[in-house]
Image (cartoon, rainbow, N blue to C red; front, top):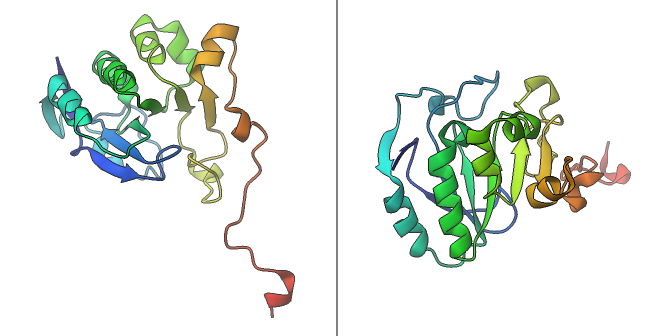
Length: 182
């Protein structure tokens, strides 16, 4: 089975999910979100076709990684291949995060996309909306996006947010004490 990638695997990411992660950058995205941080991944004919077994072999050589992140582009557009990669990651003891412009509700209704949900631990869903962009959000680009605990959501039949981000308030990492403002 082949997968179209936008770039080589990126190891040691600390911004694409919790912990130290390896990112699989998929190629192809139908959403074309205004302000997308990765517009070169939109073209479904761009990037390079790679054998899924090659990716899995690369995952086997990883050291000091907590998990993998499927991003892009939109990994949901290559659900079957991404599902195989996610299964292999779990077998290697890695957790799996997935970023998508689709919503959980859209994915759950589509059997092709559902196979990916069955192999993902955390889903960051929803299109990036430039007007809701914030640098102060953890692991997402705009306020409308959700960080979903997929296993709990599938078990309960409704969306369950990752508890620590459930009541997330924006955090200003650059906030200075009032006495520092002139």
